[in-house]
Length: 233
Figure 1 (cartoon, rainbow, N blue to C red):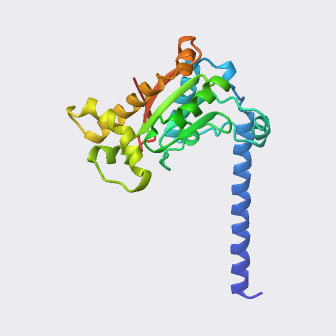
Figure 2: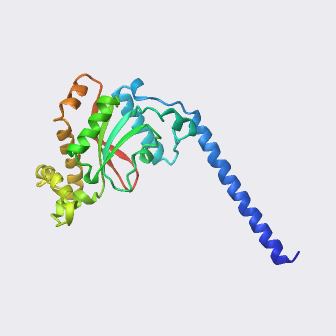
Figure 3: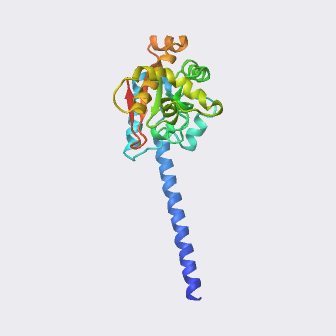
């Protein structure tokens, strides 16, 4: 065998070993995920559900994810029914995927994603479905740093097509922070979360769940630079 052919064979073998090792590592992670017990919404209080989100986000920030509820077993568990322990109204921004930033898995979070995390009638209906019919005990409205929709509203940008509808839905939130010192966009991100929560509080169905203690509504702000979610009151 010529030296050139020998080297090619060696490189091919090494690459194959790398793939095998990578596949093995993935299978180990999947096995670990399968061993983590699943917790349905029915067995969690609103405060416990919030704590579960916070702990998951801390794992994400620390780069120590557990990848819970992502195994084949979990896939089959939720195939016929879902009981998400949290409902999250968040921005459609590709950098803010709820399951990843909170280190959760299949069937854990009922995602309602729309640019600017705005509470449209359709979004509210989706949330009411998750809370009332699926018994989700926690609702979070999550905005994020440097949100494009909020930035456009602050800068009063003219946008084409239906993109402008997001700006229109955010504008009422800007009134409360127009004279507030600091970064205008950052102030608006927080104000928009608070405003959208106020819109959700107008829902009779959601209010009934809150009054009965079955639902907690909170705000959150996601930091694009650190991955941390801060609770907004």
